[in-house]
Image (tube, rainbow, N blue to C red; front, top):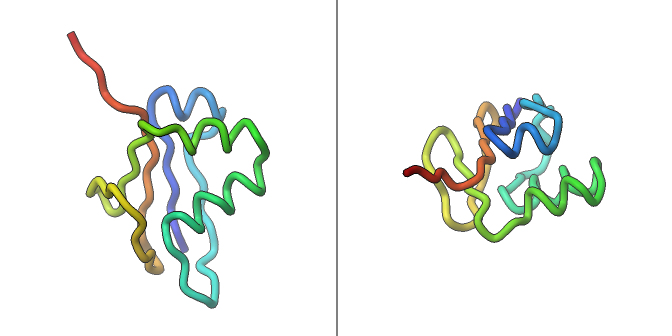
Length: 84
């Protein structure tokens, strides 16, 4: 099982706080998961999840590139944090 979480503005724009997905029989990487979510949920999800500044984390560690996912992983998508 993969746990996918959406935070802040991303959660609001997708109208979804998270999903639990069954682990596939074959290996899955972060880019494939993102593409699967976009294909299943439509263009609005693609527009949001593929933004250049979207932050992605696997098991609470920010990743800047693709990575292999494992059963039980937690994947998070969130916009960059701004402050004043």
